[in-house]
Image (cartoon, rainbow, N blue to C red; front, side):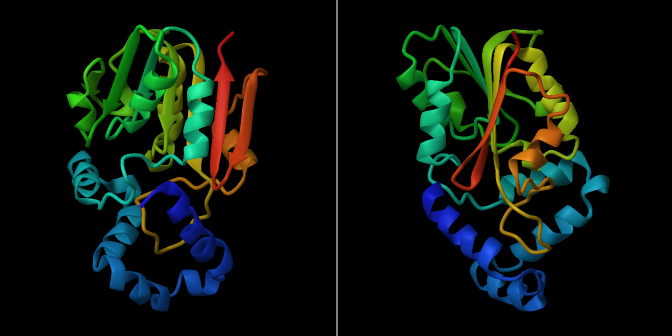
Length: 231
């Protein structure tokens, strides 16, 4: 399933279905027809967020069904990201399968260095020309300003200490930081293990405080695209 299809489904269950039904046991039972007990596991996962061990956190992500084909990004987001790359080196933090890295390289053939970071999915390790590093976003094993552009898509919503994660993205970027998060509201029962929810662009800008003067924050479909320049 691609992102465009899931966005249409999200529109119905997030914006059309009223909250009183969305948080009800009736919705849980209907959702369980598709995902079984995993719906309950996701609800408990969020409820226990401040108390989860590293092992519990990693186990859920390794067991979580892969919904999208290759990437969580829509085609519109991918085109926007690839057009906004600056400099000769790029790091994709939370690179997953490496699908976005391939598109970045295809659209920017002059890139000299391409790196991918993930802690649960190591598919990108098999891509020629990509430096793959297994690490968590809160502790990136790179020097200050090591990459011209740092990209992070569909990751911040998963991170409990998201301010620390954002600080790390800013630290390793020399020129530009690009972040994409889903534009969504929180409900008790969902199909994803998200901790943070950003229903509006200004919701996400609060997470990015302090916001530099040179930035862009816009809606792209049901996602929020954010870009900031270091200088």
